[in-house]
Image (cartoon, rainbow, N blue to C red; front, side):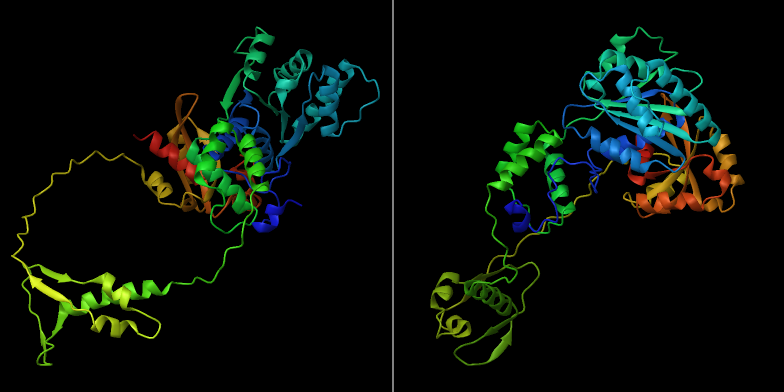
Length: 453
């Protein structure tokens, strides 16, 4: 076991490159991208292509995409390997779908088996998600057979294809076939690297997910070097942070805070200043009297702080040390207070939010709702909400889909994605057939503000 796991109190190594992560980094546009993926696979028949450099987090995105799908989806998740051929990709898909594969089974036979399975599956009113990770590793034949399956008219109504790969994947697809965009359409999404602030937040998130509760353990200068070397790629950040933690020696933080005695002396001096401002003692007569000072006068109190601190010893308390040091006061000339001037603040026009949009903006950004329906007709969305029992739990907002106005109906207010997903099972059957899905309020609020500027 690595030493820093014990030293930092980590339950596991959050920077290890392993599958099955329990926490998804939702910032830096990651959650918005996940929501967009879920929306495309419900409302679009496009092949969805997610590209990004090695280590950008594509596999994690695919993993959480699969976790976020409802029970009405069946997933065939294939990890592509270098130069995987047509037969191998078909065998991998068949295995994921539970289709029996004979040794040496021919390509045509495998394609027919998959088509027959999807044809029977389509009668269940469910959807098949083909998720191919590291698709840029595939050979030309394997990519070609995937495109043929994706543009098969008998399969496109129930089958969605998601390809994830490095930045040149989309170019590979476009060069592979001089396809007609009306027959095979692509929706390309990019998973970028992190900026410097996001990189720091990302490392903090990874540490917290493993149970770390202390102060950030990496020096800011070192963290800056890590960012520069990584170019903001999460996978590279993980490796560099792990290397740094392995050679660092962390000392446990003492939970008992000891305050040096000199701070007590300084506090006493400040208390004395307050006391002298209100009451002043005449040392000659021993009589106490109040000092009345006009609001336009300034009191100058000369407190020799250093002599007081020097006089404090182990056998001489702070009060005795203060009494032995002279304190002088003086009232200076009246201070002129400038008259306040009126500042003219320009009034900017406020965005015109609908009542529903204002309700959604007032919710906590970290909460979730269920996206139920999307339509280009605002009237239809209005009518849909009015027809629902308990319509007060519904709202809608305006977004964009394929550069056109898109009105989205949502239902409920839930504390997290898990609670929202669990609520789908409690919905009426008529709503379940619409395939609702959990969506973060932060993404919805961003859409509302974006399209109401």
